[in-house]
Image 1: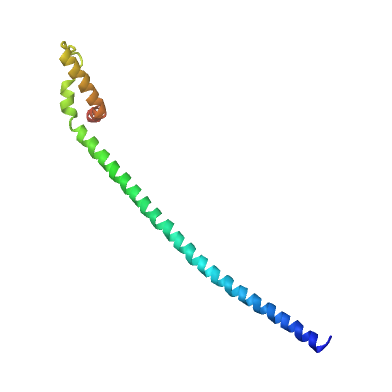
Image 2: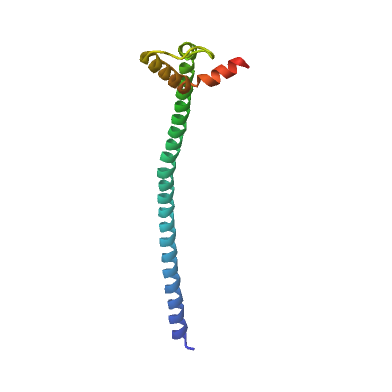
Amino acid sequence: MTDHGVTSLRESVDALRGGTDLLRRELVATNDRLSRQTRALWWAIAVPGVVMAVVIVVGMVVGLDNRRAIDESNRRWCPMVGLLLPEPGEAPPSTERSRRILAEAKTLYEAFGCGAVAAAARE
């Protein structure tokens, strides 16, 4: 091999090495850019997701607390609604109006959960 052939081979290797270095720098720059974009995307997804989860949990807790307060408030009416119901052995209502009142009182007694309150009071 002549000196000229070795020189051109070295020049080719150096050119390839330079091209490889250029590609490596571009790859690193692209990778950094994608890492930043991916990190930003994760934050853009994670923050609203966490906020939505917190809002849902708070909403459920408030809803359950409201339901408990409503049930407790309704149960306070149980003694009065119970007065509208006939005692065992009492004669049934005789007028249409009193039958309607009895039907409504039974509906309220069940809706307010008064049967459970009365059973708990007996125990």
